[in-house]
Image 1 (cartoon, rainbow, N blue to C red):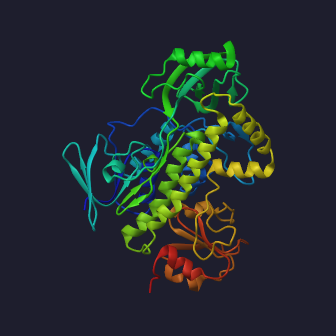
Image 2 (image 1 turned 180 degrees about the vertical axis):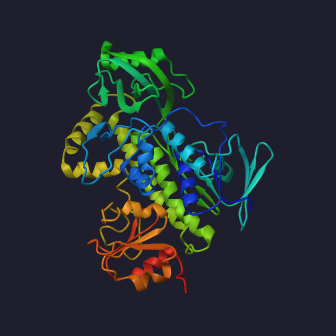
Length: 479
């Protein structure tokens, strides 16, 4: 066996998973078909839930220290959503994908893991003991498990012949990273009377300290074949159509055409092979949900693979990856489809669509609706099924980052182990047989007893049934 886990694809999903496996003490090989890391930015922001997960690993402050990454507000179908600090204490941040990848590459290298590049996968075979991956240069790698994080055109998915149902793309829009001059547009989303529209989001600054924006353009006649190059003249014409002559293109840094294709694999697990990120789900990149959802896939899967490799995973633990992340991915596809309709991507100016959007925008001003939509767009709406304890309001949700005095809860999770909050020191005996997998903390902290998985989700809370929950998530007790 060459390694415990082989990860195909060194993007945000693959590198997040690699970090989780390092934390779990699992030997890992990370490969990518590209000869070097891409310098092209794709996703442009990090959601609250992903920021929380990075904080739980001690990576948030170092990441934000890499440059100017301003906080921002979310949106749903271009309708701004105000910050709600009581629900999302870490607001959305403008951290482009290229920065995420550069940061993780350096972090992993500092811990001895470097991606093996120029590795094009051409063959895949699995048996009862492991997976053999074959590459175009004639080499092969043998691993206990393999994870596909190789993007929307996943080679692994093709080799598995995995069903990838959904909707094919019907149009394209332009996404570009730009520097602009002249009048600063006042709104993130702007529609012209003829149906052309533009969306602008902050991307922080470039290496010279100059402000960058993500510009998205769409409307009548803008849906061109995906392979058609995006030119500076096209960007200038789009800006002029929506904003007039007051906004000037100073530099076009990067541009591509994206489609509204929407697909999701039927199964995230195929024996010893797992699909994650864009290999498992594709959709319009609204709110950077593609990158964030992929990173959350990795955070969910990493500790479970670690448990399996070390031999203590309960029988169905690896199956919970599909059971938890497939519904989460389906929910993202649903909200993206709804946003696409309300935003009128094609620029039809259909009166029925405009009427629906107008009423929806009015509803979105209601605090309860803002909370619901904000949770969707921040990644905080996910609630995993936790057998036997679903009735408790905390169970299945991300743990609140409470300050326990000596440490915050997120800081307790940096070991990559489970955490039992035991404020009254009442569960020492019950939890003792799992002390090699679960840390006990919070004595005298005045918080409710709760059991937290390594990925930061509460899997038990209250007073009864702790031992059953420990066995369900952390395996057989030590005798």
